[in-house]
Image (cartoon, rainbow, N blue to C red; front, side, top):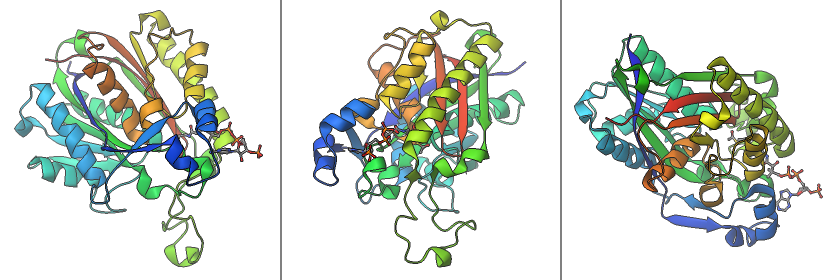
Length: 331
Ligand code: ACO
């Protein structure tokens, strides 16, 4: 049996910072409100000429360098993004592959909003276990500042830019294997989070004159409640299905949307503070990039050792959700 293993992690956050103080000069808000309601203090913002693929390339290069796998051996690149370089085509994954000099790979994007990284992890696992691919580069990359309405205080305080990437490879060693990835979706709640901009559901012509159509729109409070409920249920299920107790988890890495959501889910699972990885204060919500960026942080801080078990948990627009049990298995 061939299994899939998480070999390496990498991330990149653009240089420029957008602080709560900065935002309080742009909309009617305050550092105190944002900190209390979200836990966020600052976010990173990409330069005008820095595209989503550029962020993805920087994260991916780190993951490749750390993987011990030659780039010529990468046979699939999948990018999770809701802020692609170009809507529709070409995919951001193909641009990332080109910029990295990966020739002859299969490359495509997926759209699962903040659950994007868990979705691409499941895709990598499935391709590898089926024998179709051997070394998969997965990238969560977002330039959310490009689709954020900086006159809407309900959303602009939340989002930031960044990218995270991982190399997932085939192994025959079960000890190294990704244990399980669970994903789901429910379009009933599609209107909680959406960007109407110009799809066939709301063509450009019909939107003429409507402000905000190209930006993320969110019913924050309703989303919050569904998020806590869904995230907790999903994690309880994946732990039960695999006979794993929450104390067996070394690092719980939830999607970084709001500290209050992270805390509520961590408490429901009886996780200790040491187990729960929190980076929302410095990056805000970077959607599909948030989980790999958080894993990269603990890796660079020397807190992530070979064989340690990660529990991932995400929730986002669609609605989509997903969780994963992943041992860190560098070569
Ligand atoms: N500053 C000051 N006041 C504000 C701000 C702000 N930035 N934003 C909203 N308010 C006000 C509201 O107008 C409201 O005022 P009112 O009581 O006079 O009407 C009050 O604060 C409370 O508003 P709520 O929306 O109920 O505030 P809440 O505590 O829910 O916090 C927040 C809002 C932070 C957006 C929260 O709902 C949230 O984090 N939601 C979930 C976001 C999320 O997880 N999204 C999923 C992933 S995103 C993706 O997939 C792309």
